[in-house]
Image 1 (cartoon, one colour):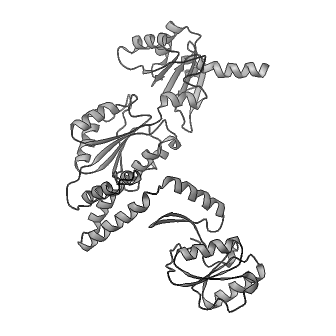
Image 2 (cartoon, one colour):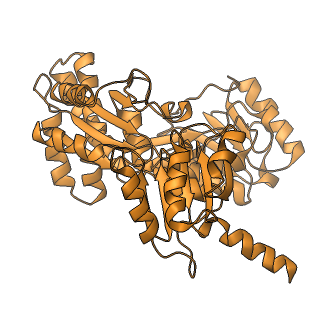
Image 3 (cartoon, one colour):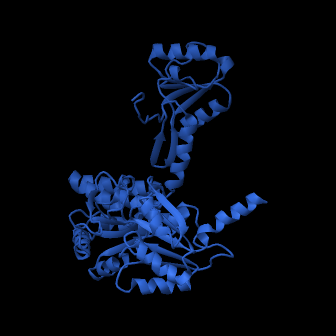
Length: 438
């Protein structure tokens, strides 16, 4: 590290700011806020020896000659000094601060880019709401109580984990401080049996940037993450370092976990007090068996949270610029799969009834699917097949429903793939060509 990060207790300590411009005013205000006894010396009034007795000095004079003098004086007296915008003349640097008192987050780029530090601060301020201040204070009170009672560190850590993954933050955010404190008191009882929780979380189609904020928070705090086979490695990297990852993906044609075994495992972990995330591709309630799992978990007395995800049924088309609906072209959408003995009859009915038909998991028997749909809407109906939508290796082909299977074979399009059928596939391209001709 170029700099050693540290927070200084300057309460009642003499600090000096040299300068009389905007930066000097800001630095002096920040030091006073930390309780320092601040003396401001105008640039024209500074003379060698003025820094005597200071704990810390900020030179905001923006005068190279004064900068050199304050630096030499501070170095000789072993005083910490920061010369604004002069990294070579700084024994410390002032980071960008996210304040959620008593929580403070300091952000430094080692002097490389103050703008970047400010931009990151703005992002963190949007993520960490004002509830984090009282939450930090609440955890601090509980920590002192546990230490006074001699609770071992391992048991304390379990309490803190329960608190951060609980609804206490949500209660504070909504202004229910008394309820939050009562809930925290229950969770802070070491040794008591605490029920766990299962979150059925949609991971989206593949790109980790498309996962929701709530899903990210749950992954960061989970004890166990039971994940599908089609979850991208980049998404799994969002899990906290303490999380135990358990692959439970169901893949056709290969050995995979049975649904009953997956549900039993979630119930077992929840009853043991664990925080569990069942991470599913797309949305958990769109052909993800999330409804079945929720039913069985609730029947077993498990607390269940459902977090929606971006379904690949819509993301596949959007990833290649094909809308599911388009004014004047398509006002209805049907989403289905081609699984099960009655699937082909269902395909024909839906093709006849909807403007846009989306068939998920369509690659294995694409030729049969296309033939059934084509028999209803005609072989010339526009179609697109998208493989691994939003992944770095996404691929797609577009053509008529009559030719789409042959085109997919020629292009070596692999599963998982989503089929989109309807005039929306070619509508925007056709419109663009018309405008170009004009």
